[in-house]
Image 1 (cartoon, rainbow, N blue to C red):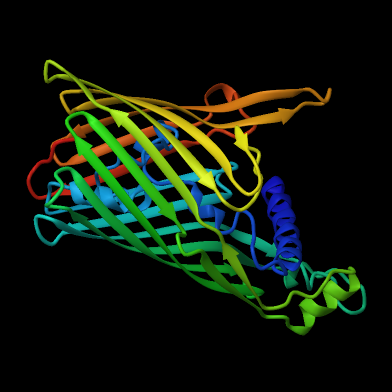
Image 2 (tube, one colour):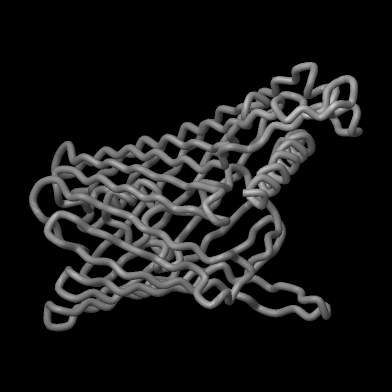
Amino acid sequence: MYLNFMIRKIYLIAAITFFSHSIQAQIVKYGNEFLSLGVGAGAYGMSGAYVARTNDVNASYWNPAGLAQIKTDAQVSLMHNEHFAGIIKYDYVGFAKKISKENTLGFSFIRMGVDDIPNTLTLVDANGNINYDNISSFSVADYAFMFSYAKKVNSIEGLSYGANAKLIYRKVGDFADAWGFGLDIGAQYKRDGLRLGLMARDVTSTFTAWVFHNDSTLINTFTATGNEIPQNSMEITLPRIIIGGGYLINIKDKFGIYPELDFEITTDGKRNTLIKSNPFSIDPRLGLELSYKDFVFLRAGIGNLQYVTDINDVKQLTFQPNMGVGVKIKRISIDYALTDIGNASIALYSNVFSLRIDIGKNQSRF
């Protein structure tokens, strides 16, 4: 209990300090980064190498063009994930509905937040007395609402395209909130076993407007501690492009082998990725899925390749290995993923579960 209290208190200080300094810049690196975590344990198991593979309701996130591959009337997907001993909670709900043979609509909701953070700004009163009854709590949470559309191109067999309209809401207790809007576009090509995918996130850049509610208590605290008073501003998240390809190998109509290689290209400056430059950096990901009779699925992947300098000032290449399993029973698919197996990277491991329900007639996995 005490550890959780201290972690949340540190998070309060870090959150207020971060916002008070970072919002002055118009173009931000890692803007709205909670949207880079992904959805669906199936994709997590393949380390996010999924832009060409995705073909269900979760395609709204990975590549909206994949929604066109849905073969049921509708699908629903749910995911819950927790980080740092449950302090950070990450939730996702997705829904997709075919409105014709060629057209599909989708809606997704994502929330990532830290709840029950102690507000100690009024812990000490004007006379210097400590009063624990003055401690209240608040949440820091990020929300995303995505409206998706996908269409098959009849004139080119195997080609589909799609788009997302994203509405973003971010809230830091009663201290600040922000609204943002952005667009994603994607395309997929499928022929025989070949799968190709292209996804452009924040293709027009995503604009997020912050409004700070600087009441007298907050202003007095910031002034007394020598911090800059936050000002209303606009954050601009630059585009990123993900390209990928894979090939499905079927063996006697029972076994399936599908490897995929993706490259994520960011445009917001040099990042600690395997291939880095200014302003472009490239983060490769490799995933593999083995299937049996469209019933059992085994997955593995490698991502998050970085050079990390150790205490002896020696650079080492680290990576994040993931694995996962899935089972599909009639219209219900249950997936599980374990990220960062064996602590091979600096990231912490997580257990990810997701559920998908098919509504309507059964569909082929690919």
